[in-house]
Image (cartoon, rainbow, N blue to C red):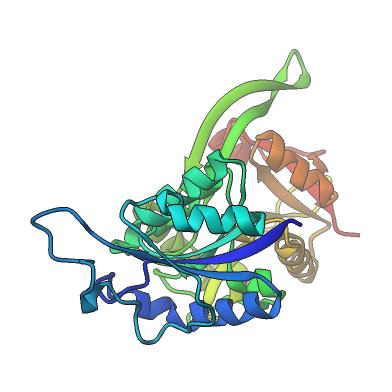
Length: 341
């Protein structure tokens, strides 16, 4: 029998103070996993290195934090970053025939990272519950979530796994600021892109990774803030108060053969993709374009194979009338349109 387990890694008294930021969601995840029939496993780190003072065996610092909900006796001690190095834990996995894991805990850059890497390497299915993982350095969280995905983990937030709904709102100064994208994960691994060769579109090899830095997130957020107060309409998908996707539409009408408005921004945080969020935001953008009096929505679209497939799935086609200014600004983009009527 193939069973599942929720694994709580190193939520101990000596761990980062940031565990308090996730403890309520972590306890909710434990309750959800228990109700779903999963095994609940707690991993406890013991530091045997001489000259160090944290996570020492039989000290208060090595104990699980008092706020943590304990619903099973499956508590296993490790002395290295990778939880699979605990012989007792590995034996438990074998005895229960567990092949699928939901990972929570700390630290995202160390023990969680090592455990996820080695679990996927061993052939297990690994799900990282993104808002139930924390780190000493919170600035590295987007980078780490991207790392997990790159190395074969599924990364989703707790609400997704629990089947909760998201909220969609028009963006304004009350729900979107220059720091609204601080937790946004813009990650894409590209292998092939569409290029026009001899007047024909062809897929060509073009391998690279695209990520937004923290500074980049601030700059983009500030740009959105500026324009939604001036000449664009924005819509956001929210998980609680966190923005997980957004789209903005320009108010400027252009085009000779048809009335176009531009879809300026259209982004979904990486761990929230493939859930219909993009389709809902695209629909809201189209409604706004119609309200503005446009016939078509214009998109200067990323040329990667995956992005083009996503736009075509939404019903977008090559633009009949190319905006030369937008095409020149992003020469590798594919100029597309969506007919609104």
